[in-house]
Amino acid sequence: MVEEMIHTKLTQAFPPVAQALGDLLFRGGKRLRPAITLLAAKFHPCDIRQVLPLAAAAETLHTATLVHDDVIDGALLRRGHPTLNAKWSPGATVLAGDYLFAQAADLAAETQNTRVIRIFSRTLTTICDGELRQLFSTMDWGQPKEEYYRRIFAKTASLFQAAAESGAIISGAPEKYIELLSAYGYNFGMAFQIIDDILDFVGDEEVMGKPAGSDLRQGTVTLPVFYFLQEDERAPELIRILEQERINGNGHFEEAVELIRNSGAIAAAEREARQFVGKAKDALVQLPDVPARDALAHLADFVVERRW
Image (tube, rainbow, N blue to C red; front, side, top):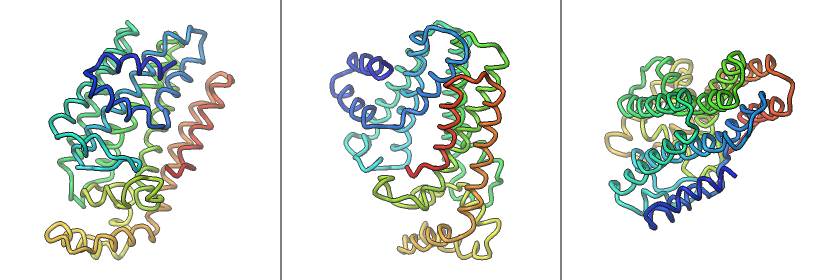
């Protein structure tokens, strides 16, 4: 039903845009954000149809961020498929992403819930802030861990948090439930992004649909990179390789990826992801024992076990 709602919205678009964005939206994503929105609404009796626009808004907003990410990163492939950025001019691609942002806002407005609309607009602001912070912190190898946390909350966890919190609000759940589901969404999202950052080094390139170390090549300091720089005696060697690659593209970038991939930094980052998952599941324990609670717990486990 969520996908039907998204598809209906797209049919109103300029045909080339509708076709391109439809290909992107219906390429088989995990649909975690709408799933969490719907599940968060099931701790209090409600008409689930009231939640559908919000669930569709969460997935549409997420897709809009991917379109803009690909422009910013100059990415030509995502999940093994050509990006919109590879087919269209940067200007046209940015406008297509903007169109999705607007459609997401329109879907959120269909809830007619002022509190939810405010959360949605705040989340959009937070996501943009995170993208700007990432752009302005590239190649900053000495940045503090707190900056990484702030960035991944903005880029990823904020939308998971908004999905869970808003789903609970739409259902009319008590404030305590809303707070607990908000905490679940936050911790789920933080773990999700940390695992994404780990998979950037250890994931199967064919499954991931992009070369290993893509974030590192962009100069983005992720948690595995942070741990390597802080705790591995080969940190100066890594910085030397990356700086030489930046200056003259000496072709040794794969050595940098191997250094991190075969270090203790991967396990350290994974331990941290599991800690966030533990906090997400702790929040669930305080909620009513309904099927949705088990589903959310299984999703949290999936976050750290997934390989894509």
